Length: 367
Ligand SMILES: NC(=O)C1=CN([C@@H]2O[C@H](COP(=O)(O)OP(=O)(O)OC[C@H]3O[C@@H](n4cnc5c(N)ncnc54)[C@H](O)[C@@H]3O)[C@@H](O)[C@H]2O)C=CC1
Ligand SMILES: O=C(O)C(=O)Cc1ccc(O)cc1
Image 1 (tube, rainbow, N blue to C red):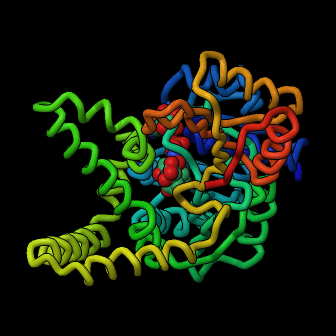
Image 2: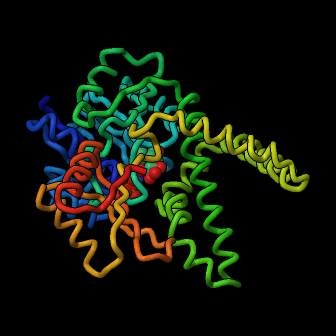
Image 3: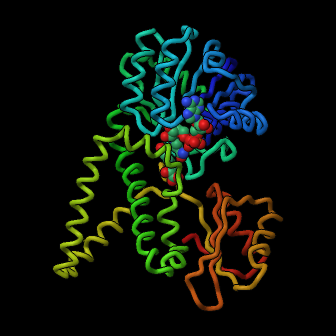
């Protein structure tokens, strides 16, 4: 497709969408805007955008597609501003925010001007932020939720999906309310819990320095998402207030239940509590991107000697297999350590497994 795409907010998500749109529509022109000058410069330098503009007006007026990719409270402000600007009659406006209720409500200002707005949320991402972390295939196989209001023409929804086809995401239409409930349960509440676990450990660390050292393993993994952008999460919590207050009430009750089970030493019920959770979790789809992305981890049993990491990455480099992360699990005191290598795709993980088997006798497992 030809046309001008205007991306407002050149961060992880705005940048990744810009790259994926360009991949499938090489003849379109991607213009970027960000309040931070350095992000515009970086976006251009990295080839994420074709050009940048100094003001919102300069980018919006001639745009065929406008993507608002700022934190959600800023997104509301962007909509207010766009509603006061002369825009093309047939421009499509969308956003990428993690909450939808308030953004869609605000979008009625555009609708009153005859401008089509379709709320959007690519349900994949990372705890990293910024345009330099952008990837064209960040959303591959992820769900991409769209929340068009009933007044929105089906052709406009199709047009937006065509623009976004390079994401290779799976589009799903839901109402803004359903969206906020679903993401509250599977993404927003878990972020609050992750942050609270870090706070709790930090509190104990003040009187026992061993906490920090021991937290390097599994604790670090389950609290990874607590490293996400505080500004983004502040806005998400404020936007999804009603849903989150209800979920937190339920969570508190759930914790009270667990407390009682422990106090009364109900061994069988405690067992059941974990057994049911295990059954449910084991049935969740594997290797499919959700809001909290799955990583394609490969565990490699390796001898613990200096240079082992470069030896194994050397095997992978010979076969041109890219990795996204590598670390050693240090929980064991014996001679052998476990190297955990993360890949972007299942195919890369399979190739890596075959490659390591071909070059060494190290045992591998997918955990
Ligand atoms: N990070 C993630 O994993 C995901 C984030 N989202 C949503 O995407 C949106 C963007 O998130 P990220 O790209 O991760 O954040 P980011 O922090 O990487 O990028 C946001 C960008 O917006 C810019 N910005 C802020 N206010 C602005 C304004 N008034 N005008 C122009 N630019 C402005 C910032 O300077 C920054 O470059 C958020 O609404 C978030 O809820 C959605 C899916 C995943
Ligand atoms: O880094 C992670 O695990 C995330 O949870 C990414 C994420 C953050 C916000 C979203 O709205 C969707 C996905």
